[in-house]
Image 1 (spheres, rainbow, N blue to C red):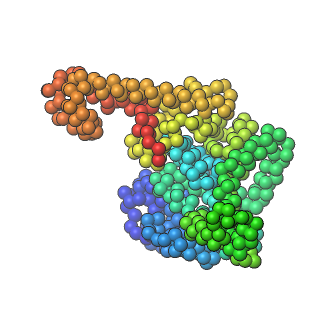
Image 2: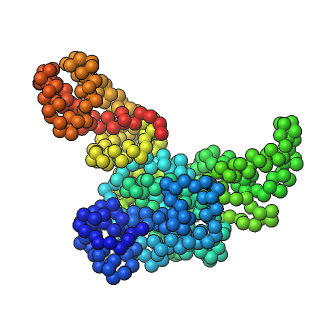
Image 3: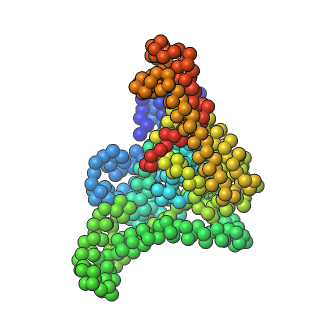
Length: 492
């Protein structure tokens, strides 16, 4: 949580942006005066600051932290109705009803940022995050937590929190999964203007309905996406929600129609198995009561409808990307009305998302952080755009572009690998195998300015040739941006 303390120019800015006070809020917000006067400082938080303060509040409510060692059963016990209410009160605390949402979102604008509106299953979402983090400065995700005042009281987690216990469990797990990305400043979890305006939400729903009713292409894409999601999740969801969630009495009743003896098992064996699966499943809380007590409202999110997402992206100056066929089709159909950001980046994002290049599939958070630490994010982005322009067909959303981009990137990576091997061969010729191994191992020291090492080696091996070879090593990443992918050689 943000605390009252003396803020200096070099202090981390209390707004939570991750920058120093001098480079962030110093000319706009006097944090020392705010703290001294005991005034409400939350309205001045950045989106990252809201995210970090919110999840810290959640940990406080659950009496649990991201690095705490606690049994899964004890962790689940923390999701009481009271805890659910407090967590949703924290949602409102950091995103109050009277917030100037347009102002907050507009401050999130970056050079290149993408707004994700796809499958929120954490495995699929992370696949999108890592792929796009190697060229986008920032990725925006709409908070999966329901905004309490966007629904009627009988469905609100503030007035009826017990029915949201399971969904809250899953949402907290989601937040914990992306927390390292939030902390790194790569992901920001946002809310949309529609969550603060019933009229805007209602009008958007009607626009979406009319659009799908009159467009056969969208109807077909919607069916394709439904089939896609079914293949991804139906089996798991059916087992969890039809078997794990059923009371034991109901399960015994179902088993009466199954000849278990032929499989050498009993009803008790099946129930023991199901109870263990309940205990081990981090997304499952508890079964329903025998008469349907403890019923739960569960949601499946893709962030926001296209209509609301487009409005939000226009404020944040973001492009839209997804992993769902229907939303790609909406983006494609509407491309002439897009912002400059979406016209430039969304077709490229689709090709990156759908490419089967193994290097893209093996990306991890560490690669995104390394790019930023080394100051190479912009150069890799420029390189990938050049490759994209060279590889793609005329129609920007054509499915062939994913394959063509992958093939062209693969070619560039192969060329970089060939050049790297040639440099290594040159070193071996100059100083011999054993000495070359030592020189290569010390490469980072040389690049950091330890010129004496180079000088000593040059005396033994011939200064001009060796210096030229090491210059090639040092400038390699600049000459071959595809060298970044050479480090991405192992799956996560």
